[in-house]
Image (cartoon, rainbow, N blue to C red):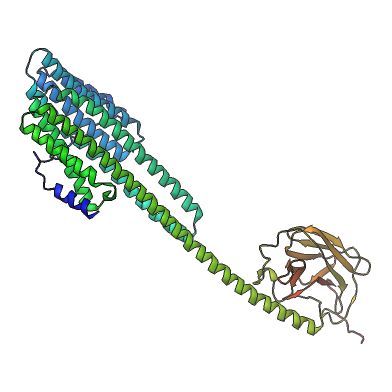
Length: 490
């Protein structure tokens, strides 16, 4: 690799025949093909061409029109994008103008006139326009690449925030930008190929010496541009072999030797051969850059996934620890409840559905279980210290949750809610007081959370009234509305 870099740097000191083309200031685009009044622009150019009589002036006028088309391409890409319909119109007219200029040169030669000076002048203007067009496409490519980088940064932020919907939307937009960049490169290649064909027509009419000089100058400029990228940025240096660099230098040196010996045809052929090698090297650099970019994206995505997985694992462990602590608290509450000797639930102090012990993810199957209880009329003993008297039979009891089950009290005041193939989860067991009665608790409902036992996957735990039990027994008290209390006879 050090050898390759040494050769690259040494090549920078090979003298060139001329400096690179100066930047061309594009004219104002005026109306573009995207405008409904574009025909006015075309009409004006047709009139200018009609009133231009000198052949040389007509040829240069076509080059001026070509510069306007390039300005149109620039403004369309910047405002409408590569998919704009007007872009194809502007590109087609650009090729037409350059073809017209080449045709004028050929016609003048066929009339017996010496067109070498005209051909050289048109060729120089042609090159300037070609460089301007290349710069337009390059600027648009950089704009799309900047948008790519912006979207990638937003995708990383959305992934860190866990916003899946935002990630999907941004990834979709990023794909559209990449598609635009690919289409832009395709259009640029098609345009270059078409312009080169017209350029060759003009070059054939140039003086052989000038033609060869121009070819060598162009390959030197391209080489300097490429080496500047490699040495300054390090882009694609891994793909440049010593053989390619040495071969390129030899060909350019041979072209210069032939030019010095006035073998202009041979010098041009070698210069064109070197130009093809440069094109292949540029393609290789682009491929390497794309591969590196894809590798960086994949690495970044893997890092994000690893980080996300670590965060989820930490969250799982934390939830597991909280669940163990909650189960321990429930066991202690159950032991205290059993020691107190009472399973009667009146106005529970905690709703299990909002506690730290919700049904687990595995609670998804169908199970068979029952919830039982009794309804008493405690009109004259609202404290519930006595059993009261039997409530009327037929009081409606309903369990509402993943599945709704309804039953009625029997003549002895007892009821049974039977669940078959039922999902476990949170249920509200509610009483519908008969006419003339109110219920205790006032809401008329008790909350029960049913889930698989943490100790045995084949049994169920019932959480209600702040405790845990292996079965749910819910008692309801009724009281007649408007009845006064009376002393209790002990």
